[in-house]
Length: 572
Image 1 (cartoon, rainbow, N blue to C red):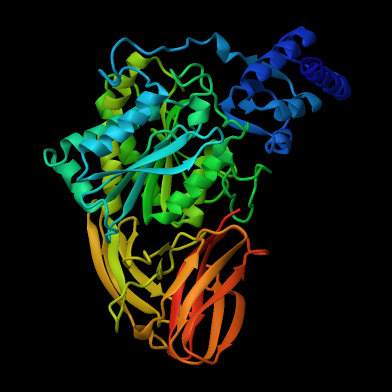
Image 2: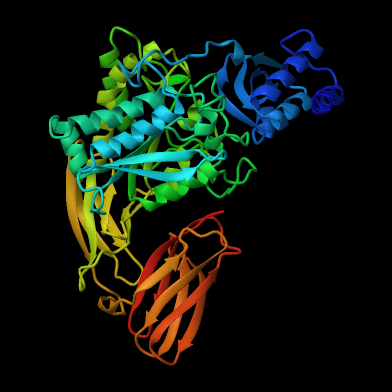
């Protein structure tokens, strides 16, 4: 009955749409094939040929644009999205990936010569093995679970893995599109390379000693292993709910759900994890092209640090090109790099989310023309990319690096660090509330740096000289303005991030008026309430999240003699 109803729906949509030119000649056979693929996989790949770009924009909320092709676009669609294509009479051609080779595991144990794709259990065991074999510098963390309950794993590699240190957190992840599997294997190999070469290779040792490195090889396990855990066989782009995870993040500048879907479990896992570390720089590995794609994807604007992004991306591409010679690799577009919106616009991508909402920097690395290349090609992609991958990580240690602390108590301060006459579109950075550390990656020049925090006077550091491939250290002491923050009250916020509401627990050391304030990251007061406490003691306050948009905010509790701030995150 289900088959009859769905087939009937597609025929009805076709009839209602009027005449439609399909790349395949027999309309009935085409729709039957499309239904068969959707029934089996839950998604279908099409080449579409809209009459105008406006037609594409109209359906962009329902389909996942993959890339431009001659005279059209290659897209992915779930059953609902395919219905929109048919209903609007857009000509299309079906790409039936079921005809592609299903790569099976070779004989022997993964990784062997790193020329095989792991089964799911082999992947899990390798990640567990990293922590077991290198306990001094490695920790394994489950950052969330997929729709089907598979663990989403990340490993942390640093010389003191149980301590939050004043250093940049760097994050590599891959395969949020489950059919783009090249990065999955080369990130596993990168983790192995870092762990086995620590103390032996000078660059590897420098990175592990001075950074908090996080690696998430597989962001969409359900898409990669939808066909069974034994092997990756004809993997899918979408997650098990038919969602494109790289269109499922908050859109910029102010669009919570650009794909008109709830945040998926895999998306929430990434958002919560990245907000829990002091993220400075990151990259997300994809496949289908050979290019580094940098912000913005959704805004037809140049980022404030466009020159720095181009430098970092060319540095990666140039090294990869040299290692691949005489093979032509990453040689297209603008010599291996492209700004996102010049290629094609997408909304709800992770790169824009990280760069806009988290005030970090992220690039999308398209690492192979084939999304799911033959396993015997994987060692080549590793050889082409691994030196670039290490250099790319090292960029986190350059630019303006410093600490922001309270001039009286010497405690860390969460502050906004702006480069004067330079910032736009939230390109400023925020110091780590746990350590006071900050990193402002920026192109060479002489800059004036402005540092401000709630409850403190603003400080300006003039003529900060920045050069490529080196750090410029600065130390910033902020003096409290009007309140004595050396008598800070303790303040706990739980849960944080929160969805509906969160509980503030704080100590009142003297009677009087206590004010609860919520600011956005631009310093605008969004909410204020007050309580009168007649006696010292422990108190709590429930902050109602209704009416508060998803995002990161500054919470402040002001007592008669002091003030304390915390960063809070509202999720959906």
